[in-house]
Image (cartoon, rainbow over all chains, first blue to last red; front, side, top):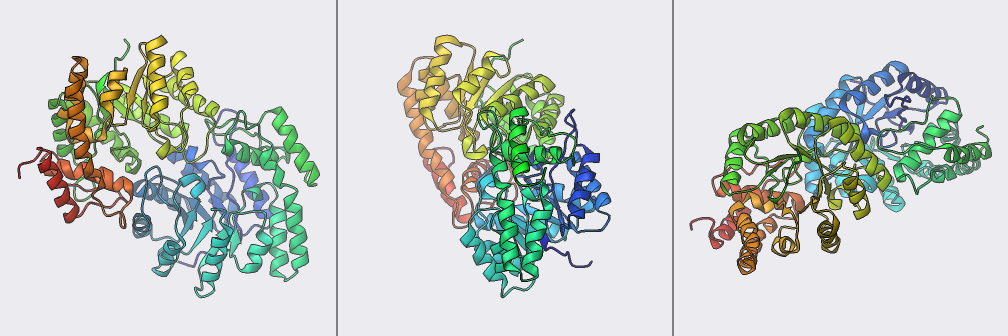
Length: 307
Length: 309
């Protein structure tokens, strides 16, 4: 088995739905082509941005199968296994690995309250059951459980994980993990933060997993390429361009919809307006962007030169 | 026919074998033990049942066992906990097929829903499954509160028949009970706050869903009976006794295990010591209580008169 190559811009791929609420596979294939053509370095299927917590087991499997076929080996594919505890995560992981994912992404268990010791046990059990490379996913905003930095390092040092995706928003802790990677070759530290990636990549982050990367993959790849070529002014300028898109996450009407519907709905509405996916329908029970919300998305896209 | 829910409805623990499979004979024993204790219903697949750790197939095993042992004796409720609407509907259809008589449904979790999205979630489940639904407010686990307005919107339109309140917000619970007495007599309002059910039943709660009711169902049924007969002094003294027993949830080593494993492991260890279930194995990745914690729980049970010295 060749080593899973995890680096660069690895967007968490949105999951398009048809008007009938089914997964829209033709739109998903177009989205994957759009991302790969833009130069992304990998795909993260079934992340938080993908509305995975709403997807059934059979939908999850079919989405990964579609991605593997559509990507056709052009970029590596990792897949989320989002669930509350060990047996359920192993069941999900088996399905996505059978579907062709080359690595899996695993959060802390959630719903109940777990110790760091139990979180370590969770990762060990998943690794023993699957054997594939594991990326730890720290997203306390949704799991309400922090994977402590010491836990991450322990799991890397004992061979359980190959790296982490940090969606904690705790930037100083993130820099600490990047620094820890200096003495740990092969420890890939990726960030889910989108508006400081120029600095994060320059500091040594292995990559970025930007939800907004669905909407403007070219913009994220531009920051990555500029830092790689040592052109820091160009990286800062590309980052400033991405900042113009940032208000998109506040276009949804929060009187109607929750945080996730407003953020993820803005990405899907933008992809619809850009002609990549067919609808901005959301998984149940998330509210969909209406015409007024959509007009605000259009304004942001126009302001950023994407429409 | 409207399902009438009242009384002591314990969230039934899920026993495991040493290999981590569902221990069906132990689950059957536990159900017999609870029925013998006089409980008025069984809530399968609650938080106490470690449902968050159970695969769909294992949940079906639990529900089929409950139907086999208790169908027709007491109402059977089944939790459907999962993160999104489609996933909950999968569990709910399996519950219906297994013969469960009501669903217990939380807000979606992992994502942060609005109250309007939560209302849509319940409506979809009701429309596609049809069974009576008890809303389950447990913000410590799902991170979102079912507001009183949401609960009464769902009740008044016929989507839910009641609420299980595990929020710990007793002021809000009391307001729900007041509304029940004032204008919604059939609203089934259950508390998960097992340490103060004497007072909440006197106030007019429909019943209680006590986790520690697994360990001493007879005691909770005595509180219920005492309140029904107006003997409040007996209800209070029985509650005081059960609250001393509640120390069994604090015997786990929290440098090693999470609070959930310590609490639920305390229940299972007590059931093992009482001879009701075979092991105190926990759903992964929860840590099992060790020999020292087991000895401390034994002492608490002996002290409480539930085990011979």
